Image (cartoon, rainbow, N blue to C red; front, side, top):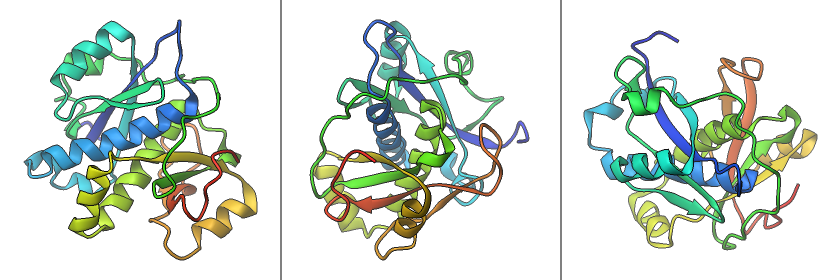
Length: 219
């Protein structure tokens, strides 16, 4: 990636004394990405980025730092279970505020505890379990998938999702089941990763289904 390429910063709250569930954090990051776009989508910051690599950088912050950054986030914090996440407009790495740039990126892994329940009508982000992605990597892929799904919705459906409280669930599905679901009717765009971190280039990572069709929260 060139230094002038834009990325969307997403920040996860990582509390070492009371860590959130892995899947809740992934869901919170994805919803935060969409909420940031919905709040500031008329900004020039989104130009080119939406039609380019769509790159996101997921970072972690302790409770004190997270609270300070959340106060400046354009759309506030998203909470799913005990997980919290915030997101910002796309920026280049050179333009990224110092408080964001200094946050750690790699190695974010939260426990795979039971996730918080989600409504039956909620979109569910299905991630490729074969890849064994970290919480940070899975969060970025989930954010790609949910924002791609959201951008394809008619405005009235976007508004209805916001008014419903922006619900979303996360499932990890492996092998042939992942492939079969990805090709079924009504799913969101299939996300194929560029391979800059953790996984090989051109690897299918995530897509969105409606939980009425796939209600079970566990693989």
